[in-house]
Image 1 (cartoon, rainbow, N blue to C red):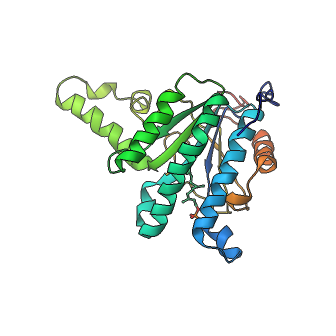
Image 2: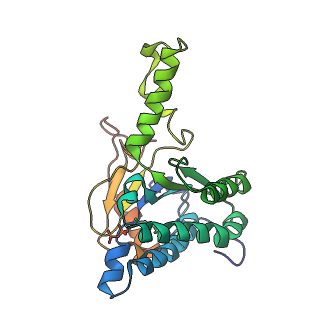
Length: 252
Ligand code: FPP
């Protein structure tokens, strides 16, 4: 991802720079279809766009980047396409992990590990372990992830504590439930971007998105680049964030 020292962040001291950007990388299939290419080629070009955006995120002073790589609903796709997406994840980790590590990127993974092939689980764990002390940018990979399942898992754990007499139900506040989600130490996304013109969350970070600004961009994911990220951030900077209150702009 880089051949030398990472450049200094360009906007980290701006009050309106989002600390956490989350992206629904949509439109790989349509990008490929528009060019008469197989869907797999769209996903492959999607990984190239991802590489560029990880690097741009650091350059733009973003601390957390969450990407929706494989949703729990994606299992309904043809087996060959699921195989392509898993193959890309394998290759992404094998080829890019050393560079991500050298660039100071910490990799975190959210989603269900159960049901994934053991080599995929091992690669995800290896990426998390190798990069655990990195601090420049945290890349949160949502893989086999669905927000409703994440919330249901948290509810199950809390219900078990109540059933075993270890918890009073009255103590289950939003803060407590939030602390049982997959990555409770990561701040909620300030900005969620979805490419390809679709305007919905599709079961992505629904708890964490309560006060996120949503920016929908018309281009397909393989065409997304640093300029597109900057323009989404510029749109975010025009929004007045009130968090249910009256004035506080960009409070967090
Ligand atoms: C949406 O495009 C994208 C996905 C389902 C997966 C996103 C995956 C990548 C960018 C590559 C894999 C990522 C890693 C980290 C290996 P779509 O197929 O839904 O496009 P369409 O809506 O145009 O059909």
